[in-house]
Structures are given as structure tokens and as C-alpha cells.
Length: 233
Image (tube, rainbow, N blue to C red; front, side):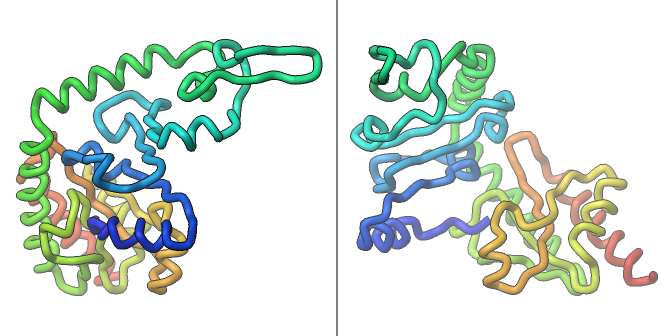
């Protein structure tokens, strides 16, 4: 749930000649993102985390870099010329869109973007901040529970990762599932970071525009109920 000081990270990457690829799946759906201000080389994010369909996403990149990248798939609609010995490809983005386009998913993603813009990303972010505050206040009252990351709401997105002493995150996640509460447990695609902090795994609760305070209460009650259950075993 931590909002990374991206300007510091990109500066270090560019200082050694590295390109910077930003995974923006947990930011673009939640608040306004100014691509030019980020000073990154590529941004990628998925559709299903912003109310869109699965199997579709967005890759933004600097045009000169995209034009230099070789395509990873070949097929119709991305070829410029073909001979028996060689082929040349169209410029970006067409060179990365071989074959029949994923039209239904693309239209679905566009509809999701229109819906989110109609609600307003500022309004969505403000709602998530309130939910996150309520979750932090409630979870931190639970015996043996530690929240991962900063407590400052200005440094957090709508995600709260936590661990409960004596309870494996996978066991906690299974118990919460039985209570009708959906969380994610594990390494969250961040194995190196978990190893760095000597953390086996965490439990992660994520909030979005459709969540409400009753669900925050259910989460807190569910974690406390699970903690008491495992404590008694």
C-alpha cells in the first residue's frame, strides 16, 4: 500500500543508464497520474483492476523506445513488407498488435475508463482514503497485528498489508474466505522485497469505489475472529 517516492527511484535508475518500467496497476485506477511528470520510460497497467474485463491492459512508452523494440508476436496487421528472406514491421503501436485485435476487451476497457472518469478519480481517491483510515484504525486495535508500511495516509494507496503474530497469512486468508471476506495472501509478486525484509508472506486487503464502511467493519471483525480461533488451537 505504500506510495513509492518515484522521482528518487527513477533518478537513480537513469543515473546508471537504466530504462524505467513502471507497474501502475495499483495507481492508475485510483488517482490521477501525470505521465509526463513521472519521468519514466514505460508504464503498464491492467484492465481488470479498473472495472474492465480480463485479458486486456495498457502499455505506454516513449515513442522512440517503442519504435526500437522488436515485436514479440508476428502476424497480420503489423507487417510493413515481407520477402522470402526478411520482413519489416510497422511503427508502434501497430507492430505490437499482431493478428485479430482483442476488440471486445478493448471496448470493455474503454467503457470502464469512461465510467471512472464520470465518477471522478479525485472522488474515488478521497473515498479510498477514508476507507483506508478506518481499516488502519480498526486493524491496529487487534492484538498481535502489525501493519506493513507507513501509517501516514498521504503515503498510502487503498491497500493495507498486515500480519498477525502466530497466524500464517494463508491460514488467515482461508478463515476470512469462510467468513465471506476476500483478501489476498502471499508474496504479492514481490519475492525479492519479502526476502529483503525476512517476511514469509502478508495478508492484503484492497479497497475500491464499491467498498463501504460496513465491509471495513466486517474485515476487522473477521480478522479478530480468526485470530482468536487460531490462538485457541
